[in-house]
Length: 167
Image (spheres, rainbow, N blue to C red):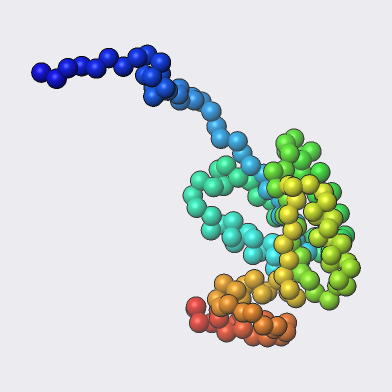
């Protein structure tokens, strides 16, 4: 018969398995997101369709609100901050993440950069996203990779062409 080796207690404690008690009757924290867009129709429709494609259960723990304002660059950032404050008062909880989405369009570089700097200066809960000329580029990138300049007229033609293929 094999001889049993006595292991000292101080060594046993080092390798001891710690049982953690499972939490009961605890709901996960509901996260709140606000997406404020420059466009009033295209961008909100895009994000609403993405929201509908989220996996089951995500909408149970996340609340997304999508607003299209019709504002541009710096005025959009200011409007987004006001909407965030307004929504926080309605739900009586802080917004976990605020996204501001706008087009580069033909705005001056100073105006465009000022909007981005304003987003970054506010706090880490504010992020911004933008497209080169128009939001429609985001739709096109679902179908093909583009790394060249495309005019607005070409956006529409290419989107229609790609959507016809899918029908």
